[in-house]
Image 1 (cartoon, one colour):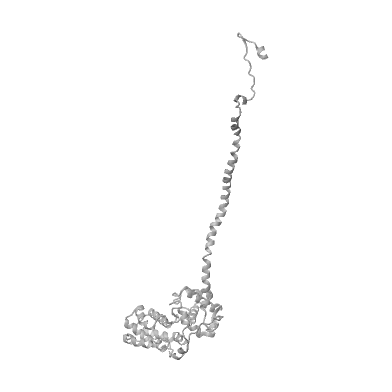
Image 2: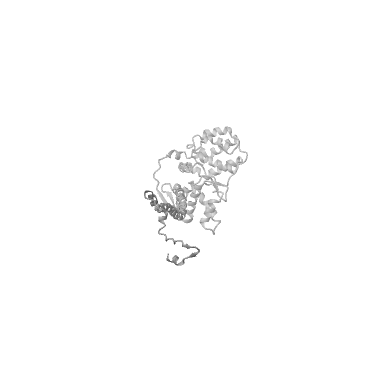
Length: 361
């Protein structure tokens, strides 16, 4: 279904909306399809197509063509389905669908008669009357500023049950567990199905039951994430008596004002930049402890080169040797200092040594 399908349905004229939400429409779809041996999945496709024709997303003239392609079936069967459904559903609203009569004439020439007797769901058919006068009086007026009323779902149902029974909140038809009839996914029908499910778990907390229902039931398996969030808020309001926004003028639930769907995107947008500083912080944190020893080791290395130049001037004490080139050179013997006088060699008188003279000297 298109994203704006629910908005278009809610803006339909009241007589048209009454037929769209009537039990007679569901009964007619089941009766017509069963007479041609159409299975359950095909019935859901037909229900969706009828809804799209109601909101003018597809012209009525293309109904047979689309059924033949999507089901798929023979051209004669598609024409027979289109003929029966148009007579029962669209012809009573021929003011809203002015081409209904000409389309019936075209399909009559192509239709194949049903192969089986029609079956019913055991539902009393609602009389679908021609709403010509009411439709002609209806006019589309520019929307007025919305006045919002905060109210619990139980209170809203007590005051405006018929309104919430017609307001769609999802796109796919649903079924109650104890019935084979396709139901429109309105606020009331969804709540009814949920309460039947909730009654099976009398000893469990409502929050756990809601989670089970939204994530693991046949009706909710095909829902989008946004539709699940909408239903979660609706069921929570009924279970915990939390307030929801309703239109004061129409009495409908303002789905676009619900807290979870509207606040979820900002949470995601703020979560994306948050990891960036967090991702940058870890590299900086380990860098600080490792940086302390690193800063201490370079300190000696950085000072060592500075001390080398200071030690180089100390060997510059020899520069006096460089200055010696401008002085008279001193012999090494002069640098040795005063030396002791050498003793004279003893005088020899033949083979006799005069020790006295030696001692005198």
